[in-house]
Image 1 (cartoon, rainbow over the protein chains, first blue to last red):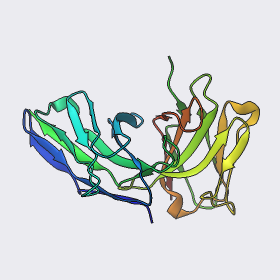
Image 2 (cartoon, rainbow over the protein chains, first blue to last red):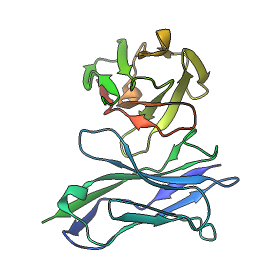
Image 3 (cartoon, one colour):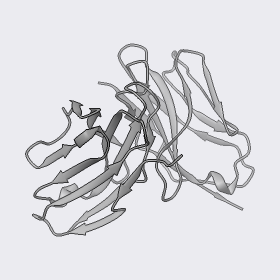
Length: 113
Length: 113
């Protein structure tokens, strides 16, 4: 079936450290891929997306590249801030849009000063 | 622009009691979603509405769960009777149309004792 697997958290980093959160997927067809972020007490927000192989999504210093050959969509940021502390969800959609989102379990990131 | 509003934010009930959650989507959004988020997991779609019509309720446990979206605006999700395993966060999201970006509310955290 269709699924998303994320690295387990929590991920604990010092401010200005490099971040990688791994995400791999299993899907029939050609999914669109997304990263969502959930700050404490708030709803999920779309962070970035990629709709086809080799696309790179980017936003707020975060990046992720759609790798079809490794079925991966790893999230990276060169220098994290305390304000990046949140839960990050990788997701896919098979319908070409935002319908039928299938989420990973989420990875909690804690950034310390 | 106001976001998706959900109430209550927290609810504690005893098992076998009924409970209801309310969602007010972003103004003008025709599509409304209810998701279930168990602890340590990503959201899973329960039901999707297009205006007043439930177009995808295949994941809604219909023996105890029900939902309605009268007049195609606000929506209510009900559980009757609640079971211990229903303890989770219930998320509401809306989008301008099916397939467009979904905007999430902060969720209702339900604890069944």
